[in-house]
Amino acid sequence: MSYLRNLLALMSLFVASALLAQTYEYPFQNPDLPDEERIDNLLSLMTLEEKIATFSGLGVPRLGVAHPGSSEAIHGLVRGGSTDLENFVRVSQLDKARAQQQPRSELVNSTAFPQGYGLGETWDKEILKMVGEVMAVEARYHSWKTGRNCLVLWAPNADLARDPRWGRTEEAFGEDPYLVAELAVEEIKGMQGDHPKYWQTATVMKHFLANSNEDGRVHTSSDFDEALFRDYYSYGFWKGVTDGGSRSLMTAYNKYNGVPC
Image (cartoon, helix red, strand yellow):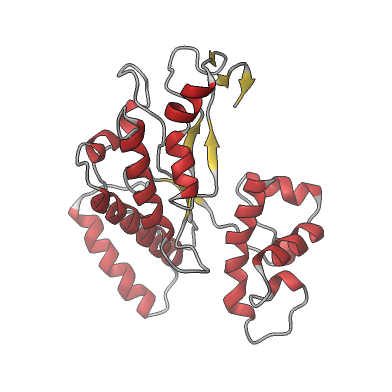
């Protein structure tokens, strides 16, 4: 339920600005109330079907709540499209069309950064924060420009790259838990921003836990003791929450000590 509560917190921001000067039908619509109170109220009004629907990319239309949308963002906002110059010309045309109040069109370009391993090789926390900031700004802009929201970003990867044969090695920052944690924290800070109330985007750290296994990952179990759990496999995720402020996780495919993640 913690993921649902965090998702609803971001969803509720979409209705706040439009309701500032209105009489509120429900308490969750009032931005002056504490977040927890608003979320509790919204949950109390939702049916079981509506709660389930939020996990599959839907909002709560009956209550006027939009879904924030999501996107892969492991090395840049993934919104598709070519990097041909014609697309950059099209972006300027979209700006003109918006000025003329013409229907919105799809924005296809976003910034592509090096894969996680390349970013990890910089050993530079400031660069990772800048990468996070760019992805967040582009996610906000894309959502505003196209009407296709993508404010929940699937990043950073806090896994450890233990074996180059793992199919997600290129997503990870490296094999050292301290390095991975430090870089993940800064990227999270860049993505979510430093506003005391509103997030720029919501981060989704992945893949919890011990997902560095490609052969039979959907049924095998990663088994290890408490020391490896605390000092190695979970360290990046722990710091991402405690120091970075991330509030959601993408679970791994595998089991951990026999328990499906």
